[in-house]
Every structure is written in C-alpha cells, then in structure tokens.
Image 1 (cartoon, rainbow, N blue to C red):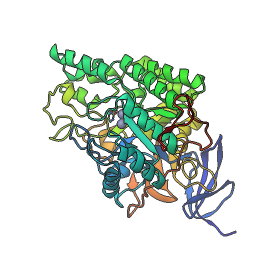
Image 2 (cartoon, helix red, strand yellow; image 1 turned 60 degrees about the vertical axis):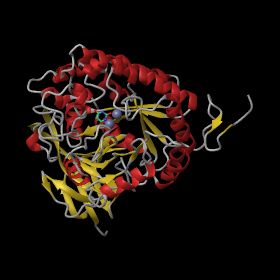
Image 3 (cartoon, helix red, strand yellow; image 1 turned 180 degrees about the vertical axis):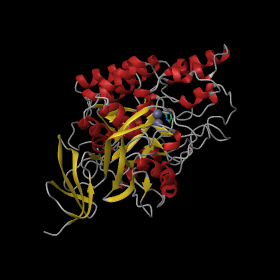
Image 4 (tube, rainbow, N blue to C red; image 1 turned 90 degrees about the horizontal axis):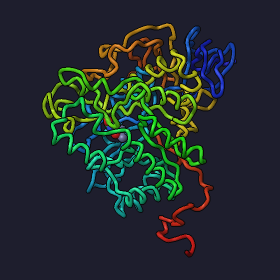
Length: 487
Ligand code: DUC
Ligand code: ZN
Ligand code: ZN
C-alpha cells in the first residue's frame, strides 16, 4: 500500500470520545486514518508521548488598537510564531469597530494587517461598539456571509460599552443572522462609581485595582446579559468568567435549558489578586479585567471546566511590554490603575499551562483538556467541520506532548518578545515537543521549522442552527424590522 505523507507513530491520541494508543496518518494536510502499523514517507515517533488537536485560542488581542489609544505589542507574525511554539494552531483575534468608524472598514484593515504573515490559521471575531443602521443592517449581514460569524459586545469601558438598547439591537441581528454573541460582562456604572470614589480618596495604586471591579459587578452584568439573551432568545457566550458568582448565574441559566456558554482563561485559574500587590509597579503586570480573584474562585473555575459548565479556555492574550514608552508604563512607572493598559500576555503559555496544571495535575482529563482548548471553541465558533478533532477528514493540526518534561515557566523560554510573563516561575510538567499545521511541522523541540508563513484566514460557518422557533420574548424580526404577530 502506498505510504501516507506523514504518520505519527504510537502516541497516546486524544481522539474524539476516547484516548487510544495508535498511529495518526496524514495525507495532503488532513488526517487520513487512525490505526495500527500505518506507514508514511515521514514517520514521527511518538512512543511515550501524547497527541492532541492543535489548540484553538478563541480569544486573543493581536496588533489591536485599544480604546485608550495603546496598541497591543505583537504582530500577526510574532504572535502566531509564539502561539505555535505553545501548541496553538488557530487563533481568533478581534476586528474592532471603534466608535464613529465603519465595521466593514475595520475588517478590511485588519485583514490587511494579517496579510500573509501568520504562521497559524486565524479567524476574526467582530467587536461592535457603534451599532448604527449601516452596521446592523448592511455590514454585519455582509460580513456574516463572508464567514465572520461571532460578535463581541462590551457592557463595560467608556469607549466600548453598549447600553441595553444597543446591545439588544446587536443580539437581535445575531439571532437573525445565526451568529454567536460574546459578552464582556462587568457592570460599567458600578465600576465607574466605585473607581471615582477610590481615586478621590487616594486608593489609586495598582494593588487596589481588583477592588474597583468587584465580583458583584461581574455577577450583575452576567445576569443582565443572560436576561437580554432570554428576551431575544439567542445563544450567548460570556467571555473571561473570573468568579464563582458569575459562574453560578451561568449554571442557573444552563440548568433552565438556556443556551448560555462560558469561557475562562488560565490567569483566572492560576493567578490571584495578591499578585497585584508586588513592589516596583510589578502589580501592573497582572492588571486585567475582570481582575484576578482568589483561590476559592480558581477552584470553582477548574470545576466548571471539568463539569462542562465552562466550555472554552482561551488566553484573552492582550500583550503590553512592562518597560518602555508604549506598554504598562506608558503613563509613568507609578501610574494610577485607571491609566494602565489592561491585559496579560498568554497566547504561548495557554496550552502548556492547561496541560500541566490541568491534565498532569489531575484536575482535567485529557479529553476535557482537548474539549476546552480545541474541540468546543471550534464548534462554538463555526469551525467544527475542519478543526479541533483528531478524526479522518479533519485538518492535521496536531500537537505532540512529552509528559515527562519538567521546567519552570520563564520569559526566556517564550517566543513572543514581550519582556515579562505573568506566569514566571510556575512549574510546568509536560511540554509540547512538536506542532503541526495542516500536516506541516511548524516547530520541533523548540526549533522553528517552517519557512514561509502558511496561516490562512478562515471563514467560519454560522454557529447557530437555522431551525429555531420564533423569539420567545420580543416576537420581533430585526431583518424585516417588524413584529411577527399582533399583540
Ligand atoms: N480585558 C479585556 O476585556 N480585554 C483585553 C484585556 C483585558 O484585560
Ligand atoms: Zn473582555
Ligand atoms: Zn479580551
């Protein structure tokens, strides 16, 4: 029999529904077969190693202009290279519409920024901050037809947030177009009220930052976002869930049969609010929103991943240098927390951290790790036909892991060029030894192997099924701009 292009031999493979020791055959960039004694022109020995689907990082900010005027520190080229070293083969950053600008133009610009520079596949979410008629009735439907099928909205941040009417408009369009809405759920006015008073009274040091965005603000907005989804009757995904209280709202909705999905991130599982109380402005390295919480919340979020109430683990990578004029210190090296760019770098460490602290530490099964880092994000965002599973016909996006490896996370091990990692010193058990994108080896044992970037901009399917009944609450067809029946 003619050999396959490549065969990965004898690893423990996280196949859909079960782990099995077998060979994985690759032909023309796709998985061709799982079996025994398969042969290829290239054979990779994975004896004693673990093979998982390439990671899908469904929430990262790459080369993005933030609402405060800072630009995140990496490019598609540098971010994708770092991601591949960490075992991520698809990343989903955001094309952001800033107020007063066109969403369609934002996507065109962002496409140009990516160009042909990405080493891994990409798909863009949309961020809508200005839901004008043109945005709602022309741009979103046209972009959806092109494969941009998820839309993030914010309930917080002055320059990004939508009021309820605007949020409902966006959700209604998502329903009509069968798109996945994503919500940043923190209550803006609670945070603004508290922040104003904290600053007034001199509590503006970065160590007080978590107190300015309390759990109740996250819980309240999570509940509110779910209520809006109830009214419009659309699925909805709450991003970067950080607390027991927000998770309880999500579980309540899920138990009632509502299609509410949730995401969390390694920082909420592994880092804590106490990290913000570091000397020499070190807390700024840990400044992200929602803020870091404490150990009880970490434990609840691990449980949420393990029991399926949290479907996705993304990085929310939003990288700024610590030193230098454009990063965390852009407003001085002791700036108040209101003037520090928010976000942590985490694209490359996401998979290794989850493998180590999840699988190797016994918190997550290999199956659950695979689900939350690859399979579910692919399905939820309309990439489930080609990504996120080790099964015949799927893209051969694969990671080979050495479970015996022991190391400590260090900025020197990472490839993103950022001058710090918030995970410095964390013990890593297991590491990715090889990452393949559509059958092509990108990196092996820390060596970069790819020549030219081959990452593609993917078109996503519409993630929400077509055959849903009329909306329960509103009875309003947003496309036709009319009520569906008489009152
Ligand atoms: N919070 C966000 O919502 N996005 C990027 C960074 C952050 O901390
Ligand atoms: Zn957010
Ligand atoms: Zn984010």
